[in-house]
Amino acid sequence: VWLRWRLDRETRPLDDLREVLARYDPLHADDMPLPPPALTELAPVHEAVRQMGERLAAHAAAERAFSAHAAHALRTPLAGLDAQLAVAQREAPPALQARLHRLRGATGRLSHVVSALLALFRSGGEIKRQPVDVGQLIARVPFEGLSIGLEAPAARPLADADLVAAALINLLDNAVRHGARRVQVQVRETHVVLADDGPGVSSERLAHLRQALAEADA
View (cartoon, rainbow, N blue to C red):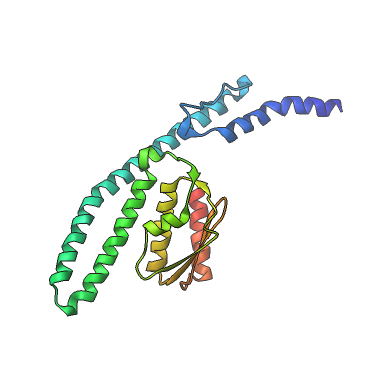
């Protein structure tokens, strides 16, 4: 019993450090900095974690700035391109109508992606959680040729509406590009699930994608 008590006493600072690091957010270190270490021996660990957090925050800020700048830079040219294609479609002979229609569709999808990036990095990427009406978001981002069904539309997940809209745009765009004609959207209290009738991917490709995601998280 005495040895157990001594062991618990000696390892308690490590448990405290684990809890502190679990709450530490490098992107909000100014508001919630790391507290001083409980033991002098843990000071190097604290300093190493703090420096790593600064590097991660710097990388995240650079990525947000680049994505926001790229999205702003692309939005105006894409709008001009769509306008020119609309004029060309009105004046073109019937033989070119189908091709121009496909070009306008591709331009529209790219504009959706740009809008998603702008929403994602709005105000420095701040997350504003509130009850979200997923049905209204879907109605604002319709996709031609895609039938969208909605289950449990009364559910209101607590989330950032702009970020949910950005995610829906990207997922619906992927469904269209990969041959889906119908998407079923299930709205739940904590998340939204999309399932489409597209051909999907092979088991080998799925394993490759999962490995790539795991490596990215690492």
